[in-house]
Image (cartoon, rainbow, N blue to C red; front, top):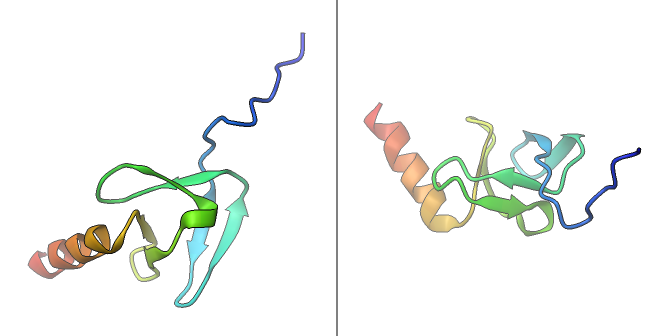
Length: 72
């Protein structure tokens, strides 16, 4: 029996982040926030670090990542 595809299922995409945009390397519906672990739909992805290749759910998570990176 063939498995049915669930259109509401969360599938993680593989992304290459650049300074101004991102490229989908392997298809999916979401990426995971590097700080909170929350799932971010690709059409809502607005915050990332191209240097660390990480996605963030919002500006607060992006700031937290910067602050953590400065402590290292």
